[in-house]
Length: 344
Image 1: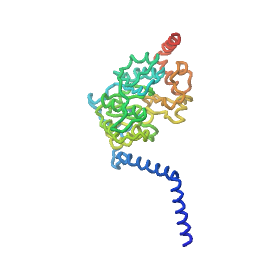
Image 2: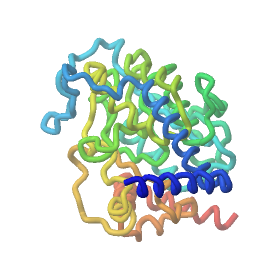
Image 3: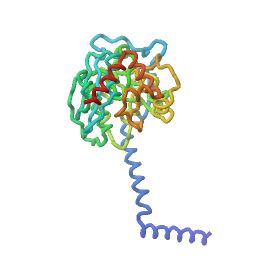
Image 4: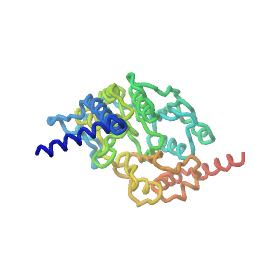
């Protein structure tokens, strides 16, 4: 036993000597451990992580009646205004092509808003933008650098903050620029706050690419206040995961739509394949208010797409846009516009 103890002590002493001679062996683990502790300290501030057992159930979308359960119809002053908001161009030279043009037209045709606000720091350029801007109410904003004193380093996080600030000011329907409406949102405007699940049963969270909210929504106000604890390293915590956790505590303040409402297909490999390469012929008439095209995940981009590129493709993206073009007899107009631009 004594010999074993001495051997162990000697080995331990040798290890310490090695570490003192080569501090890089222990420097990385110490830094990693410190970062983990820091993240835990940040997360511990988010009291929504602890969900009370006595919490009431969330208010979920009912496919059979196309409404959210358990909500009383609000007075006319509490109805979400029928205005749409896009936040775009927080970085220089934002692309704007035929797809964005068709999304704006679909928003006008399907949602029929009283006004469409286009909130930007840098305006797009190009012929499709020139053709589209007359439909929009332009509102220049400054891309925020901080929120409650916490730095905003990524443009996606800046856009997350701007959309909440805009909804707190105006209320209405927020859409990402790659969200394609399929029908009107009137029945959703009866509720003070509406978000859709990202992933089946909200496995990822409640996504902020589509938000329907009244400016006085208590959920919206609390969501914005939670940015007091913002940390850039937590990628989608504040935009997607936190709202889901909040929805358990504030279940009487939000209507949660299931994943088919806005985010089906998803951004997964299988979902991107269905969107852009292999349409399975699914029916999107029931349970879908819009389709998120997940433009950032489509690696080839659509900045230079033509009418023919859209019509000749084989994904859900191509089918829905093509159906829209033919439904409203847009094909000839779009082709003539493309041709005139080539001639000039």
